[in-house]
Amino acid sequence: MNIADYIPVPPRMRADVLGRGYAWCRTLIAGATLLTLLTNSGDVLFAPVTAAGAPSAPGWNAQLFLSIGPELWRWVAIATLALVCTGWRPRVTGVLHWWVASSLFQTATATDGGEQVAAALTLLLVPLTLLDPRPSHWRSLAPMIGSRAECLRVVRSMIVLAISLQIAVIYFHAAVGKMGVEDWSNGTALYYWFQHGHVAMHPSIWDPVGRWIFSDSTLLPLLTWSVMLFELGLALTLFAAPPLRRAVFVPAVAFHIGILLLHGITSFSLTMIGVLCIYLLPARGVPTTTTTPWTP
Image (cartoon, rainbow, N blue to C red; front, top):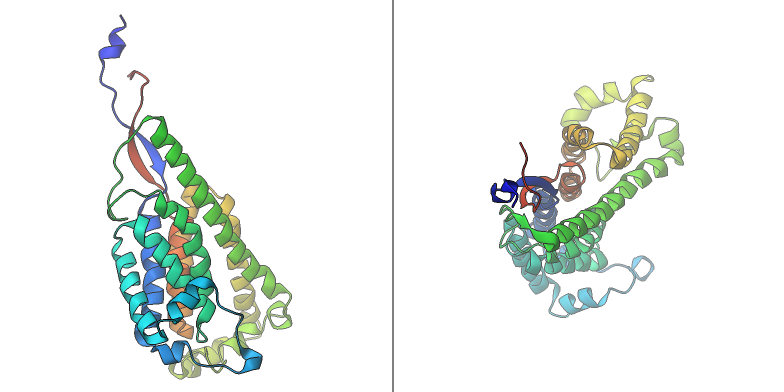
């Protein structure tokens, strides 16, 4: 008999995607929608529009929510999103989170773009949450033992790969879509965006600083083109090694915080920061037991 059979097998570390990036992604996306619902009444969110500007017919989930009335639906959604933010029972709240995000996107008439991203990402997160057995997404995973646990790890990794591909497409489309717009291609778009009626830079910043910076014939195009290049770089980060993805995380978050501070688009910025958490933060190491005898 081989003496190696009696040597204890120490735990090895395997990466699992159900880490802090996944948890912060769910919490921030839910928190962004929660802020929107807390700061706007049902009459504002679902204001009537003209026939020419009416959205397409809502899906079954939105119709079910709106059948109980916009204001009551808003409070039901607020309670649901609060549970998601706490991380409680991902298997339960994952589907509910998508239901709320999708319903809001399909029916709300006062949105800022973050709702579309939230609806897509929460749908892609549903299978991942259904494979999350923890009572809270903030809890550490139990040690993975056996082939079944290893298969689940691989499946979860493939789901996150699909989510990452969707995120890369979002940033790629944002960059390439701008290239076909004259104001972006000639480098003057930021000047007009920072004076836009709805998302303009605050006068206290524009008058002393913004007007001077964005009137410079050299600096303005460089800043404008840098936005497209940075978004394109974020899309290509899909193919980068984990250390580089981790290094890009802070500049990417700063980019969206800048959008929040300069344009005041809060829910969109928070949603995209949540998206970056699952896209760029590394997977968590989880202890696993192996049947191979240990050798020093």
